[in-house]
Image 1 (cartoon, rainbow, N blue to C red):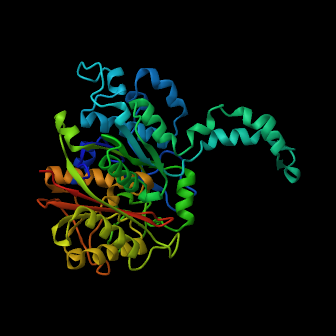
Image 2 (cartoon, helix red, strand yellow):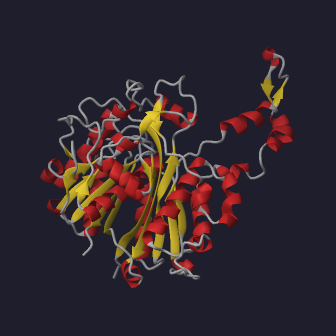
Image 3 (spheres, helix red, strand yellow):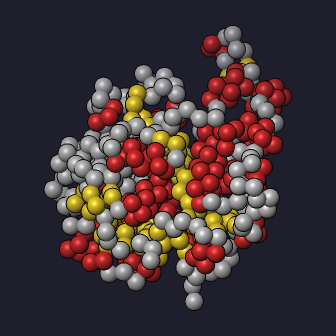
Length: 450
């Protein structure tokens, strides 16, 4: 018999706040985190806006003995490390990190067996430090003063260019380094994995953690994802794929419009979202607060195209049906659904079609939570933030509204929560995610804990 799995900790680093409480309150109060980009000069791009996380110091979220290691953390890694600390603290777990930081309420030993504490973290393409890399490349040019005969030299790169990079340079940009640093800081020695499937990464990582605990391979897991698309390469990729709105540079707060009749595209962002999943009896034994129970997981893949969504949302429908069968929940018992709602015409239509296909008549009436109007799309970090917000909605009994969804597109045919928050009293909630590239899909079902 499978063990029951609950959510006991939520860690969120978003453009509207650091911490799940600040993030959730901002969404309920309809505050937007989309601004003109300040991390770099975006003036040469057609889209110049994004969701930027408020200032923080990563050294404030690790033990003093580990601060030197923060020098080899790219932005994505930092977001994961901060979110992991926040989730661990929120769950009341006493880990190696908390003890060394003096935040263990006097405890000198962990309250979880490190060999039974795992991690599954979604990651994206980590952008190299372009200034650092450009400086090294500049020293690898033959005939630098002769424009007509200037050329990059692999020989000079090997002899001189690489020596201008720190010996540990590559470790800043490997996707698995998010999980690497998190597991070292918190001494999580149970099964660990990194998943790189775009916007579906977080849901797939959380689903794997769910199975790991269900099957008795761990008692708890840190899981979710983090990614920063707020860099020139991230902005360029999304621009070349024609996914971004270019009409709202002067009104960034109005830019991303999930499922709205007048939506024009997405907005890049950065987020870190990590959750603590825990076996029920383990959580009860230590008196943990329980936000919700995870009861179903399903995944699928679209084979039609790696870049274009299916018009009928078939792969998403399959993932939802698998998750609901796993949870033993029928469509009429789903009282809240969360869709990514990135704000592109085709993707929103595909998601809506998949939801309606899986839930039947309920698909048109179930309240839909959509956060991208306030937060933008951060890729691997987005799904975990959505799930954390949903867990808070279940716990608090209120659902934040979708920002900028003034009039739901009739072609979508769904019931987006707008313009104000709504009460939530239902038993089951459904959260889904679809990768914009690769087209992996995943769905998770949460249940109010009782």
